[in-house]
Length: 227
Image (cartoon, rainbow, N blue to C red; front, side, top):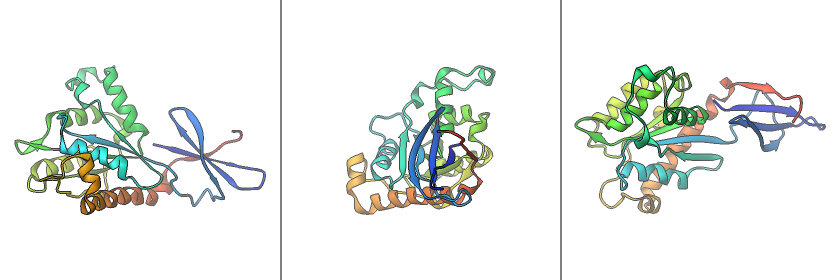
């Protein structure tokens, strides 16, 4: 989880500093009360459950990076196909690809998942990735939104919701919606260009951001004595 650090300057204002990956970076500077702060930069990890190059779900994830609201950064996960098959015996020393997935999940403020449906169930690659996250403590309590790009195929979506709840993720219900991407709206460009669809995507991301703003006070805060 992102840690937001505060340091008073000579004028009594609060420098808002952000720690990510062991590095401390000043994101913004403005008057701030440590008991009432706003999330300045939100990172969403977008995960598509499909390995197809022309995947609609992958196109949606990439479109999110172009439609994200100010102060929001979308990181599209590209390593789904490189994850080894889940093996509980490797949990004591996970493969490097698994460690990278967990690092990205841990660094993200929230996760967005879009998955196709196969035989009335989740895609194999997505379920495999989720299996590798079951024992990862960084996923516990992680805010997650699930989007269904084919409302007529609801079995995988329902299964995904059940899996996420079982894994103790926090489902952002207001952002877990159906966005019909059938017909001609199947590429990044067409999603961005379609007013109704892009408005839905923007609304979904705004709901994710609003959720994180609402739980901000529960996140870990501490002071810095020096830059």
